[in-house]
Length: 399
Image (cartoon, rainbow, N blue to C red; front, side, top):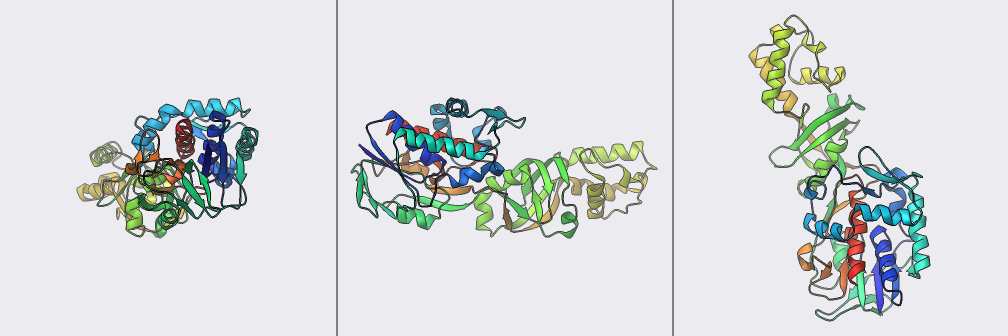
């Protein structure tokens, strides 16, 4: 049997290794368009490679997989995060789990993961073809296998693991009729052109919640203020949940920041307590927990309150403005910026056209998909690489 794996990233390499180990007599060929394998893995996690997550703090998969939750439920049953850790440790990679449950090689070197996978490919006997872009897969509906163009070589099974491609490129690659959803960025920070907010660059707020006005998109977590706008876990979660909405709206809109991650009623209660207990004290000297003095001065200015204002002078209107600012502070969004080394995209092959238990095309038997080729993506924290390992292992187990 001849098996082609198209795409030399995490999913492609892992699938090729798994297929060859399970089917040692099969001819497995890995095609990579670039000059070397695993280019993205080499830089992921700041060059340290956050290769999975313990999932200990995940209550529901949909929280970390905004798209592809049901596929990931099946894939994780076949090959979950504990399997990933055992696999790499069996190959000689010692791992460490951080307090945030992100798993890294103890060496803190992504190249150790790259070298390990390359060694496994060699030892398994996978034929690797770099600088070998595949332009098109010729296949007939209902007829197993496909022909790779250029080269005209026929394969009994073809696995597509190309990630982060545009919809147009994916449609040129795939046989006619394979549905592909638009590919758009999924993890990014937001540009906010507010001079006051940008002046607070470097400020970290431990607990916030963010929302896009006029939508149901919400996300919570730590917020980092930058010289271009907002970043940090809360922003990345929001960008992932709202990836398609933001793309459709040219990365514009209104960002609502709840600085306390609390209802407005709670903010009103805190303000009333401060006014009752410290009536003669200046409000500027009593920031809420988690709010720095600089940020508190900014928020008071946003609420149109004097910095020398005493709590007793606040009044009902001032209290209402301050509570609204603390829980629904509105800023215009004027674009996005890529988050560090993240290259995650939302979009890919429509999951409705695949058999969920095998990730095989319903129309073209012998054509499989894994990794970022699928319309599956996740939050930052090792979840995207786990999706690559899990979906690749699932496909390798059924080839």
